Length: 110
Image 1 (cartoon, helix red, strand yellow):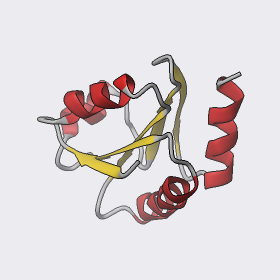
Image 2 (image 1 turned 120 degrees about the horizontal axis):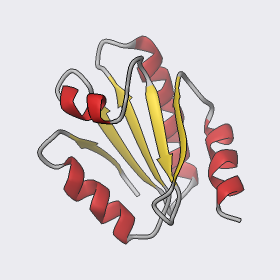
Image 3 (image 1 turned 90 degrees about the horizontal axis):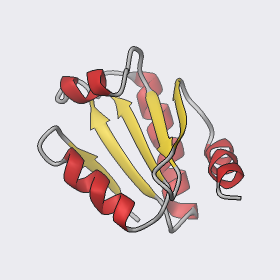
């Protein structure tokens, strides 16, 4: 699955599309001007190459401040992960390695 960049206009539709595919969803909140955000984005790009049944949605908080507020994003980067049952399984700030993201997703699928 490709990494999808969204804004406030198409976020809900892309999120619903991902839920309909019944696959884990990662939402990354970041900013173009945030160096740690770029580091997390690199990890997500690696993850996208390794895992096929995964949706990754990118939100630029400068362009979509209402989404950041809705998801209680207080620092960047923030990552939110939903499992295949649309249950929130992760919501934290900071950088995380691709291999650790896989562990989080796999631990919740059992």
